[in-house]
Image (tube, rainbow, N blue to C red):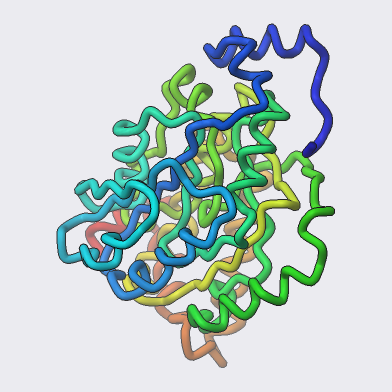
Length: 323
């Protein structure tokens, strides 16, 4: 069992809040569990990462891929999958694409993955156990064994080797979880009863890459239960740089999005100021000797443009679409 179950009264209360029957919350069978992947312009990465899902000890009941055009995926990459795969087409933007998956799902739990996130083989099995045993959990995020977003990126083959190494740490013993402020968007399992009850959606006012959309979504969902990090959910985020936001746009979002969420009251002022301060300082310090894979000058330029717009009263996340 992952974590401790609450009292019977807690089950009754959560059944009413989440709109589920007590027998559904308490059952020890299977839940309908799907994997949702928004993607754009990364066909090769998606085709390489998808076969890893077939290695899960608990197969998903469905994989839903949301693309922006038919050129974003290859039919051959999904033809041999041992589970149903649906492909949806949406307007571009990670928030819009995630919402399109939500609006076209009847699953109990959706595991949202970035197209370059590789799950350890027991990830979905642990997810099912976690959500069955702990009905007060509404979002769970996993432990990222390695995150290529912090460096030049990790190849699929290197990611697979890292997952093999992770097996040596005794996955069967990783049964704990702890409350956190927000899930990490590259891998987040979401209880859909809470989403439907609260009519929760990813904020489409955060365009393109949707910087900090995971924070906003998590804080909205927190009204319905726990947001946790679970030890048994492990994986590798490749952090592939293809089709990510240019430096100026990301730099603008690094300022505009925290301020927008602070005004919306889904991000505390402490978290927002800390987030902006870290990013601006890192961009300024590393601008003189930037990493080859990071456009520090572009990010700092975006930071400064956002600060100017803030002083002129015209700051909004959507301005990145004009940059």
